[in-house]
Image (tube, rainbow, N blue to C red):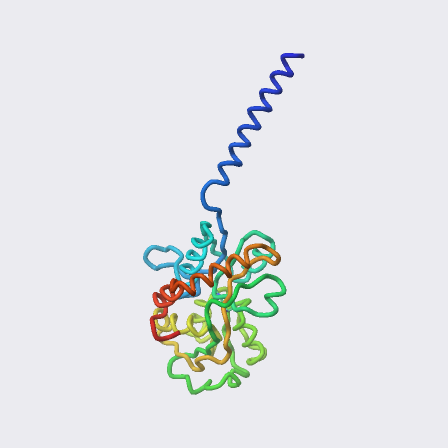
Length: 254
Ligand code: ARG
């Protein structure tokens, strides 16, 4: 009996040590910041065609924010619509994907201070710009949008019934090309980038008809929101933000 007790005590001690060591190990090195994004939104978040790595303005910004907070950013590529629910559930610490700050979203999650001023554009096939000179002219047209976006919401208000929702912004451009849709409602900088790089047969018909600001998404009532806002403010005042901005958008376009 005595032997058994001694044996059990030794086992417990060994276990305590191993578990203890494990815990200690975890606190070493930078903590992980699990960040969700969606990679069909250039130049904010996309895969580099050569390296296939996730890159873009948002990625440089969140990595710089992580560095300021002494945290290691781990990126997870997800469907756009899955990002906010994942942050809300706690599966992600944050999300960055050109996400517009809206009061409806702020009911579900926290959003950081604005980090980019954006707007919505209307895109049509090249040569058909005259068909849609104002947002009101979307009425009755078949409009392609990305599901879950502010563009989808606006298109539904303006076009009525015929809104086609796709998983990615690339699919909206493909639908326009294939003549399944007559117009796209999409964020202005992304429209410009995709036309320039991938879809030269498309053209901007209305440059910007709604102004929007992008913010980083975090869980309500966590300690991350003030920390991310502080890091963002520091990057803005130190000039690091401007460097990242110029890398992706050039000097004059701010
Ligand atoms: N700014 C728009 C929104 O928040 C579109 C964002 C789409 N982002 C993306 N990674 N696909 O609804």
